[in-house]
Length: 384
Image 1 (tube, one colour):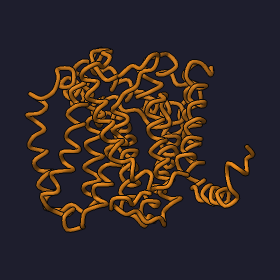
Image 2 (tube, one colour; image 1 turned 180 degrees about the vertical axis):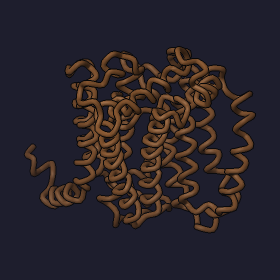
Image 3 (cartoon, one colour; image 1 turned 90 degrees about the vertical axis):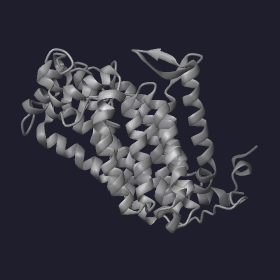
Image 4 (cartoon, helix red, strand yellow; image 1 turned 135 degrees about the vertical axis):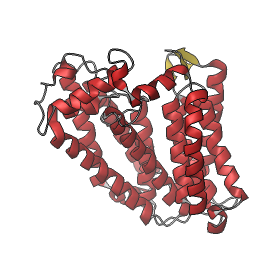
């Protein structure tokens, strides 16, 4: 069978048009951030591609191709898959409770043969897609304030409770904040938002004292006073602050960061890679990376704004919110402004699972851009 028989000329033309509609400045910015991550991983491994930098580059290359491929998928396909992805993620989280792997005191993984993965990563995408589809089908008045609000709150609460029980408080917080961001973006009444914020402030103290595991409570208390245990629970934050401060304005130079090179800085390739960057490239290097992150967020939000469908707007904005929360939580964590919760800096840190999740999400964002004029209907049979 010839190529022309598999793909008719009209279909090839449509693929070319879709390919051209991808935001290539966005893709280039992704490459710059991932490239900076590879350089840092090369540096902290003692100027060696092993064990982190080479795999980082390979994974990003594969994920970039995946993002481009996902961008070609019609947004109506994403719409049809929204609830199935959410339900699949929820069932996988239940499976973790029943037959999950326990590592380092937490049950967060499922193993299938030689492969293992965290179902919570599926839910980071599923919650955005499902809520975007839900709000696509209801009126602005009902989204503002009605009994319908109980449905998205339940959709958020179920995965959050399952993930928190693993326990994985960082990921549970990320899913909760992403879900609530979509609820707000959908048009929730500001009176409800204000009342919810006050209720949250009232709940936090008793939750910290009675609802957290001992090690989680210790992290919060250490965050408030890391000097109380400088060689124990406060070690991570104190070493990160030392790395950040010692870099100064211009940094010590590439490959010359003493905190990372001499292994004082823990998890230097994952959670604290931003501190490594600060030590070697200083304030200028940090601002440069943050500008690139800001550019990605701006371009993704602009894509959400340009979409003609409510589903596309909410999905793109929700996934952008997830990415923004990654950056903000990790940045606050390494600066000692938030407890250490194990959230990496996306695309900069080493780790294939988070990179895959982020790039699949950006694949949907680019699909929204490519198909921004597509009309998505919520009636039965609208898909085919």
